[in-house]
Length: 180
Image (cartoon, rainbow, N blue to C red; front, top):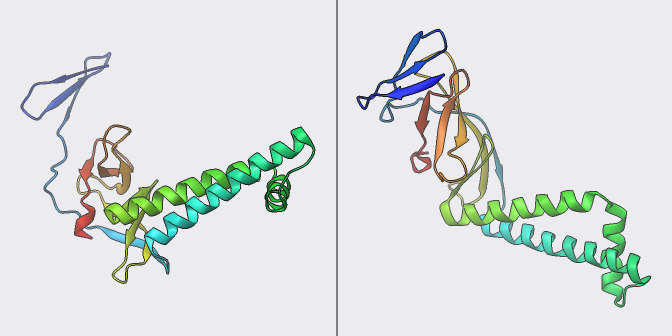
């Protein structure tokens, strides 16, 4: 399959059998009927969320290092480190999960504090009117087909957020979180 873009907005996709499919890009100015499927407001400020995530990451990291130190050298020189090592040893593989979760929470809190919007998968995180963290699932009916539009990120090198159709990923609209 190869694709030709003729510069006039139409993209023609050729297949092995030479059948032609005309694909017109979605109109980015078309209004979407965005609906919230559910919303959960957490009574915590975004900066507090970032601080809690970072402190949890640091404490779990120190506990993991102290646990490894106690395995290698037989003891931990400080009582405080001994408790952290015991905590990390009891969690086992859970320390890695806790480290990753703490890093995600810290990054989410700081992104919310900076941009007032963050996206993790298809879940939107935003700041409520009272300044608390609100999680919600946003969707919209696709104006071009019978599919549902879901939040998706632009990719590694594209910081924008889009609504992408569940039936046809070619149906894609940019999402402006400032309009919520």
